[in-house]
Amino acid sequence: MILVITGNGKGKTTSAIGQIVRALGHNQKVCLVQLFKGEDFFGEQKILAKFDGLDFFSFAPKHPFCFKDVGRQQVVNECGQALQKLNEIAENNKYNLIVLEEFNIAVRDGYIDEDLLMGVIKKLNEKANVMITGRGASQKLTELADLVSEVKEIKHPYNKGIPAQAGIEY
Amino acid sequence: MILVITGNGKGKTTSAIGQIVRALGHNQKVCLVQLFKGEDFFGEQKILAKFDGLDFFSFAPKHPFCFKDVGRQQVVNECGQALQKLNEIAENNKYNLIVLEEFNIAVRDGYIDEDLLMGVIKKLNEKANVMITGRGASQKLTELADLVSEVKEIKHPYNKGIPAQAGIEY
Image (cartoon, rainbow over all chains, first blue to last red; front, top):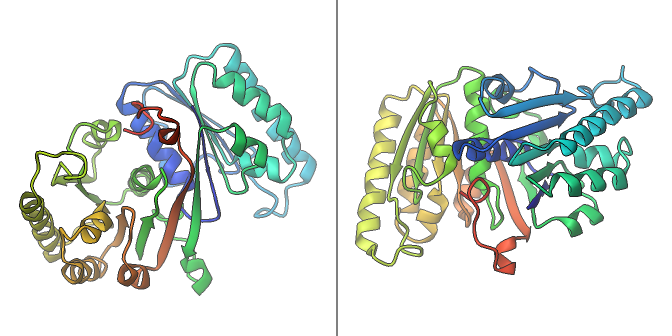
C-alpha cells in the first residue's frame, strides 16, 4: 500500500511516527528516511533511535526556507543522496514499512525529480508499505497512492504569535 | 495548549501516538486515556505499554457501531468511568501532556456530556497540554482549542473493498 499524508495542518509527522510505532508493535521491520529534520531536534528522534526493528536515516537537515545559510545546490545534492539511499533500500528490501518524511516538500521545491522519486516508490512498494509525508503532495503521487489524507489547519497558535513548544511542535 | 485532531481521514490516532513519542523524547510525563480501542488490538498499544513516563488507561473497549453485543447503557457507564478517571487526574495532575483518544466520538454519540468533558479539559489544561482526538469534534471544543487540525479523507482503500491491514489500520 502507498499512503500519503499531506496538507498544511499539524499532524503529518506525528502521524508518521505513530504509524511506525504501530508497525513495530506487530513486529514489522521499518525504515524511516527523513528530510529537513536534523537528527536530534525533534523529541521523537530521541525515542526512535532506541527502537529495535527501525532503521533511521536523515538527509538534508536544513531546508533553505528556515536556514538562510544553506544554498540550493547543497540541498539538491543532499536530497540526491537520500534518493540514492532509497534505491539501495529497494535493491535489498527487508522492510514491511518505509516512511519518507517530507519528500513531498522536496518534490514541490524541486530538490528531487518527481519521476525519479515515483519510480523508486513503486519499486519499494513491491515488497513494503510506503508512506510519504509533507505538504503539497503532487497530483501524480496522489493518483498513484492507495490512501491519501489531507491534514487541514483549522486553527494554529502560530497565527496568534505563540512560539513553537517542546513536546508539541518539535 | 489544547489540541484537537478531528476529521474523517486516517491519521488521527497515529498522530496522537506520534505526539506522545515526541513528548516522551523531551522527558515529559504523558497520560493516554483511550476509548473504543480495547487494550491489545492496535500495534502501538504493545509498544506504549513499555514506555517509561507514560500512563495508559483504556475504557469502553467496544463501540456499539462495531460490536452489536454492547448496549448503549454499558457504554455510557464505561465512558462515565473514563470521565471519573479524568477528574482524578485533574485533582493531582503530574503530567505535561494528556491525550484523550476518541473522546470527540463519545461526545458526538452522546456517551459523554459535552459540558462535563469541557469542564475537565479546562482543568487538565491548567497544568498540561491536552490533546483530544476523534472525528466530529464539537463546535464548543473547536472554539476552546488553541490548535485544531482536520484530517480529511481524500482516498482510502476501504472504498475499494480492501480490508484493514495489520501495521496500517491497527
